[in-house]
Image 1 (cartoon, helix red, strand yellow):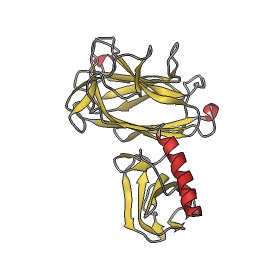
Image 2 (cartoon, rainbow, N blue to C red):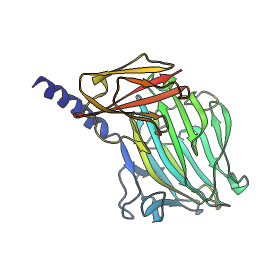
Image 3 (cartoon, rainbow, N blue to C red):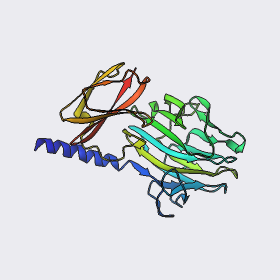
Length: 304
C-alpha cells in the first residue's frame, strides 16, 4: 500500500509537469493549431502548414510577405532545466529567422540574445549569425535544401540572474554549455518566454517541424514528453562525476540501461549490469535511463 501511494505521488507530480511540455509534428488541420502557438501581438492566426515535412505529411512555413509572425510559447519559465528541439529547412537563395523572447504574452518585445539570422539578406549562403549574445556576435554554418536540427538547453535552476543556455545547429555546438542567457550588455531577461519565427524580409522562406519541449529528460531522436512513473530518485548512480566506471543501484529490478548524449543520441544500449563502462565517451553531460516493470527513470551524470 505504501509503495503504491508513493508511486501515486510521483505520478501526480509527473502529470503536473507534463502539462508544461509538448511535442508538435505539425500534423494538424490548418487553423486548428495547438495552444502553444500564438503571435507577437497576441492570439491570432496559426502557423501556415504545407505538404511535406521532416517527418509526416506537413510542416509549417513562413514566406517573404514581411507580416507572418508565429510565436512558440515556452511558458515564460523562470526556474528548472528546459530542452527544446526542432527541425528547419531553408531553400537555396532564401533566408530564415527567429528570436528568443523573454516574456509571453509579448508587450514591447524582449529580444534575449538579439536576432538569429540564417543567410541574412540572402547574402551569406550557408552562414548564420546570432547578433547580440553574451559572447557578442556568434556565427555558425547550416545546410540549405535539407532539414537540419536545432537543439537548445536552458538551465534556469539558479534563477534568471544566473541562467545559462547551450545551442547546437545542425548538431554542431554554436553556443557553449554554461553561456550566460543574456545579451552582450548582460541584461537579464524576465523569463524564457518563447521563440518568434518572423518573415524578416522579402527573401524569407523557411519551414519548421517536429518540436519537442520538455524538462529535463532525453530519449533517442527526441526527448521524453510522457510520464515517468518510476521516478528519478528510485535508483542511484555513483561516482558522479566519473571518468571510467558508473555504478547503478535500484530498489526495483532493472531490465535495461540506455545512456544518451545532450542531443538525445543513444550512445550506450545494454542489458542491465550494475557497472557501465563510460571511458570511451567524450567529456560532458549525459543521461542514464533505466527500464523497470514500474516504468522508466532518468538521471544525469557528468563524464570528466
